[in-house]
Length: 295
Image 1: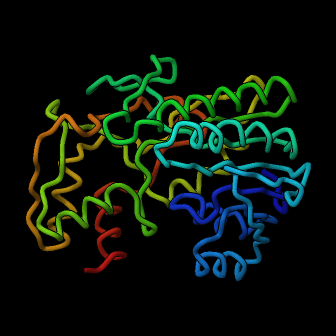
Image 2: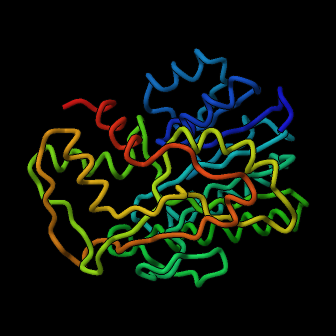
């Protein structure tokens, strides 16, 4: 990725994209689009030299969005639980954005939520797609699959080199699923776990996410490159909650229920081959999360 490239980042105030935009701004020209309802985050982005443009991808006015940027990093996601809105904002809007911008390359942040539930099986990029997030977010998996189809179409229709990276469990100073677990543990609540235990995942720290973005753009191709994106260490949800609880000085308690997602663990072989392994040890990362979120 050439230094000084112009990168358009969507969803730039979100948990993942906020750090990505700031990281890219160290060496590149960054334009960020989002609804910018958090004035503090907008101020932090602008302080880093990032151009911020208010756009609601559920009702996009793309006339204000620059065309022909070098790279598009699409991290925007809507999780309203409303089918029309989520399909519109996550899939249709991506197609409209690609048609308008025609970027030199695309990194589309997808999710391992696109896979069929498979328990402890390490999911490869060629495994069956499905609806593993239905117990907690009815529209999420399907709208993410729909967005992947749009990204794949854009790669072929407009010749846009594309990487579709299926993110597992992102976490760090900006939060993430483990941060919700931390809040529950501090409140003395039991963390829900699926009965098909252990609930295995591949959590990936924000530091590794930010570091890998340029490399993921570099491997973009037509047809699209599809790659799992998660920590190279397989970790049980129960194990990271134990580490969070110890660091916070509280007790880890669990309750089994089928009204939550089971483990979604991935084969990271292709990721390591393309962009290398993750570097933040998950235990260190979880302890850092506790330190960043004091009681």
